Image (cartoon, rainbow, N blue to C red; front, side, top):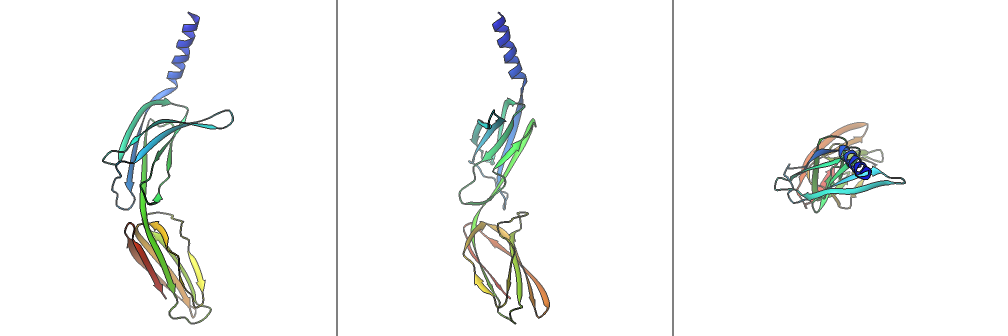
Length: 206
């Protein structure tokens, strides 16, 4: 009898540490806002073990025709949970691949992806006045704040170079360049759009 009571107490304690939690998972194209149906998702529980963190899958599935899924289950209140979505093929940009839920009863995990385009940059000083000519140029996708895969570049003199083609997220980009020659500085910019899988040549003549 004591053994049965002890088992019931343990069972009650384990149950009381859990609460029903709902995860709303969505995936869409960062450029167009179009949902991604059919992508797989997984929810993992993590907790601290004696010597290392431990992980266990508590659920997985496939996003529906609207690129979303709801997952509801009684889960341990003292654990943290990470939600991941497998990216579509040929992806060059994604938001965090894992989103971490704390103790929220309802948690929305929103994922964004963008497929690749292929960018070649050609920069040419076609009006060179000498070694003191200076150009600083940069380009960034407009829809990604703080994109740091391309860093600004500065070159001096009668500069001319065509860079090796790079895979980058498709969509609308802005290129800017600042030119200084004969102690005078001018500022320039252009907006350009790359479609998925497009091989795009951006030429900057200054």
